[in-house]
Image 1: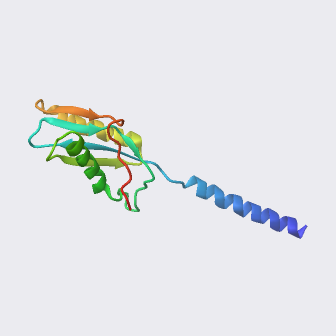
Image 2: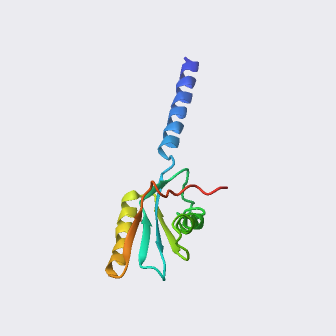
Image 3: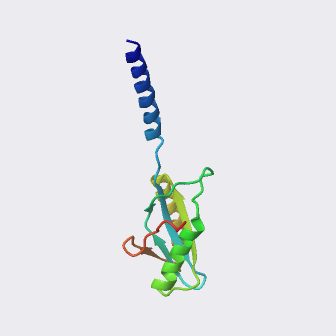
Length: 132
């Protein structure tokens, strides 16, 4: 009877520990990019994408976020022949909040009648995790 109690106690503790570790798992991080230029009336933006194998740091920032901006900048310079662009990345663990932010950013550009928006499809460009 003593061994049964010990076995049940160990099983209970194991179940309790695994339940908490599974619950607090990795949240996906979503991002989209925007690229503008002072010499061009086209503003390029990406679709909202899931960033692979990435998690925000303890302060809620995306590690190496500057490298994601450079990915977009390099794509536009090398693939599209569009030099001198300023690229920004927006990120969040909440896709709904990020979608609202994307609408807000695009609406600011739409207010300026001389600016045209050009979407970059995920099939053409996709953010990838920077090398360690």
